[in-house]
Length: 421
Image (cartoon, rainbow, N blue to C red; front, side, top):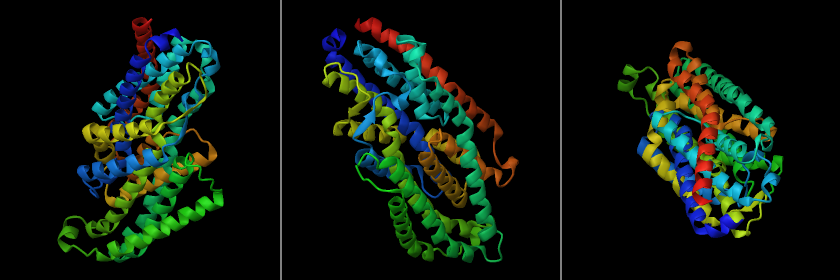
């Protein structure tokens, strides 16, 4: 406690800097996962993706990012073991933020789509083992995370595969694919609006004190899906056949019909992502601020000041704008070639899997789901349509995330402890 009182200003400044660095990493890596399919399909440009994300990621983080957040991310460690010495937790949260942010910087530079949740969890585990002891870690949670390496991509991939097959049978493999695309597109827009709004309701709005029952949630999502379908209908009707483009690519005009869907999907996914994953960056920051403001009291929940939400939103947008293009390239072009219809399937499948996971408590990673969904779309055209070398590199980066985050956090923890003691 003496350490906190003596270095209160230094600790607060470091927490803000490291928290900003972490949210920058989320923008550079995780947001790129959400926008990669839209950009890779050609539905929107990188610049448009940055503008859409800047608006809707920030709105999601600020409006629905949560007024109460868990200070011990995902219940990974037992906070009662540091009640007598809160400075350990403060230094640990600082070390975890910096370690996770450094790993996200490395991964983003390489174009690896890794899980920001797993990055911060691995960092917290590393600090806990080094600073508190092996028994402080809830190891069953780590087992769930390892399970998610398989569960997440398989679920996302299976659903995107089914959606892609449905589009091929209902639209592409028919005598009049363009007319069928215009007929079915509003229904697919409805599905996208319905599912993505459920993601937001179930995972993003829980902190706005909107007590919606499951039937009410489905009713709101249904209404939102109808609204999007109604808005999209005039845009879809304006699409005309392009004979020259069809001569180069048989389904070029059909794909133009799906382009408006990706605009809606990109905006909705950005809002849902901002509302949910901003906690990975600002949760540990909120823990440090809470301990300082409470005079050293360690609690499981911490109030989340508005300025922290703003900081998180700004950091996410800056990360996407400066480094996000690398991971966007991996998701959007390196795994498999994407068109608007394929990107739509991947986006909807990822959103639907997140909804399923959030309601059943399955341990999944949104990043891994997004990657699996893109792989599933590629597999619908055969194994030869995906780049196995790229997928192998991504899987290696997933496996490395927990141990590297943990080792970095332990080293940084001891460094900070030595400097401030």
